[in-house]
Image (cartoon, rainbow, N blue to C red; front, side):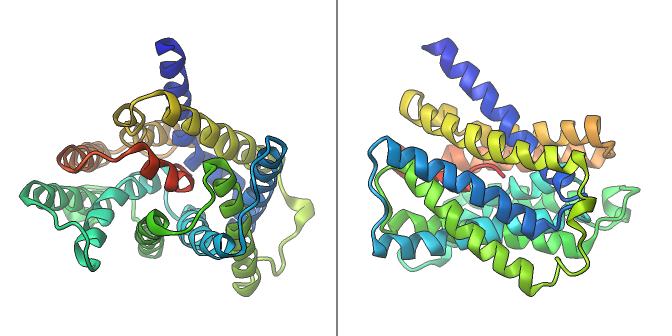
Length: 310
């Protein structure tokens, strides 16, 4: 069993760490919001049909309302903005910024009524973590970077982290199906609707030639659907049932590193010294914050299953 757990964990590291590069490749010739809509529509249909075939009940009308809110926050506000931002931001840097989401979760918990107030260790972790983000995206005079980071892309990524935080907090008390994969599939379906609507409103399809979509982008989209969305979420669900949550949660520390390395090796993204420095600071701060927080039960992890990875 231990060998299976470690194999599944390594697969999860690689799969969810590679989705940032998969997005980068897919949006080369497919509009970002539209590509995400297709991805989650197909993935959602597969998961829902599979869960129905195993005897799981469809969500109730009230649950569909909660699912629509969560799917919009996580998949449109989160994943959709990441895809949009990766038009201007290297995939590795995008993964690092999104990897800071636990810091925003601490802040949101502190601000919401009845939320958990951070202790001094968490505050120190927050200060260190945001210092890492500043080193990553700050002025070249401070970071020493030779590459200019698009401010709109950065704003979109930070907004994505905030939307993930809001969606994650809401999902903890929302009325959702007991079967985590049914809930995940339904959230993907509702999220895809929101993504398609925004795709139309923003006009990203105006002048887009579907016949000009490259084989490379199609491979990227297929990878996101069948490996990133399906293999990743199923592996994560299996690990929740068979491994300690403390071990499963280590994906959050490893994924950004995998994304940075893959972006460098396969997409020729620059690996400047300040990126490694920021990587260590951000991941270290997240580990420090998590080590000082109360242990999360397995049920809570299932409730926010859809937020994991990209």
